[in-house]
Image (tube, rainbow, N blue to C red):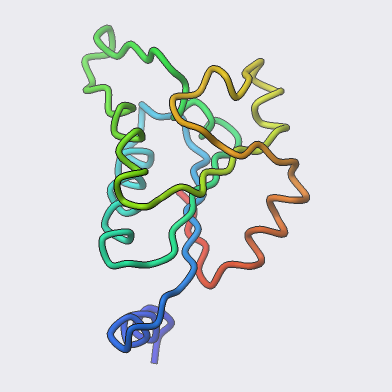
Length: 133
């Protein structure tokens, strides 16, 4: 049986699994950020324990005041504010990624827990499933 099939079987049995979605891509220019956000919302709808981590250029997904008119793409960043309504409250941002891009947690759309790379790795190791976008 594949791991995905086992996950579905566990879900059907009412077992809650810990899913962490790791966002590493900039919000625009590829479909990864938007598709990842949609997968997160779907997972939460199935009452799974969902958390998100933002690393590398993925931290840009959460920056306040995104203007996308010039690139003619819909700004989906306000959707991150809806996460709390889906009981997704575990949002982690890698400190080193923020610092490398000259950003602070105050510049982000939603409250996050900023943690160092080593602590974030430990948090990932606690998960049943880690999916990167």
